[in-house]
Length: 298
Ligand code: C2E
Ligand code: MG
Ligand code: MG
Ligand code: MG
Image (cartoon, rainbow, N blue to C red):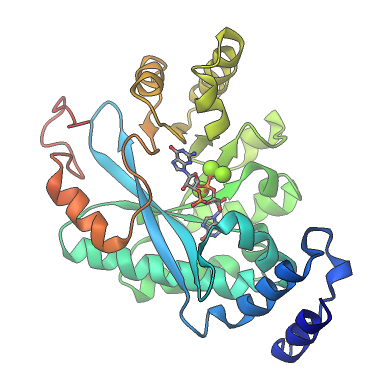
């Protein structure tokens, strides 16, 4: 641990110095050394994005993709964001890494646009990142520099992040909405939204957390929960997306509930950009329905 601590000291440059006992989640030496490596990962080009498609249930077409961050660690292989995003947030590095995510996702979307694919790109934002002063103008500059319009992007913030400082969140969301971005609340149902803020946030989409999708096959009581979340979302006029759809049975149930879009392993796992192009080519699913009612392959 001492050695890792020294590592983190010497590599932290002008960053604030962190010691392992400051962070409950990073008390062991391995977490500390992850942190030390994280500080270099951006320079070493070790981050990459994978993309997971979303399908419109009624139209059958692929409506969008979500960009998901991965870290190719030299000795540990590919590391999940669940493991390193909290560390990025604790160290403040999320601002820089999140900025890279926005740029790379915009670059990729522009490339897909040139190849004739009309998609919406969803990008996850950390609370630490979107509460930076000037964030809305900053992301707008990236969008413009890639020849995109904000309405091609949907920005996702988790329900718990949004509700941490709801008045502040509201202010930033209004600014982003004014610029024309689509806005989504992610992992809906796992945080503590107040109905008041659900009405006041200028959001377009609720993404129902995958734990509720899982509940579809776990009995009547669990089904009652996803039914009520869906009804709430629809009643408030939001586009409703179900996350974590793994089985045909779940899909059928969500279709019966009139959920707008699904995302999950049943349709596709998150994939590299190079695979995404062939996924679109090799399926009969189009980015837009050729005419209403043309059914999807899946
Ligand atoms: P999320 O935004 O809710 O993303 C959905 C997660 O569910 C992804 O995990 C995805 O791989 C996983 N998933 C999708 N379909 C299925 C399924 O059918 N079954 C199961 N079991 N899982 C499924 P991933 O990629 O590990 O990302 C985890 C979380 O990390 C994301 O949850 C998001 O909150 C965060 N994250 C990912 N990329 C970024 C990023 O660029 N910036 C920020 N701030 N957070 C990110
Ligand atoms: Mg998300
Ligand atoms: Mg989610
Ligand atoms: Mg999640």
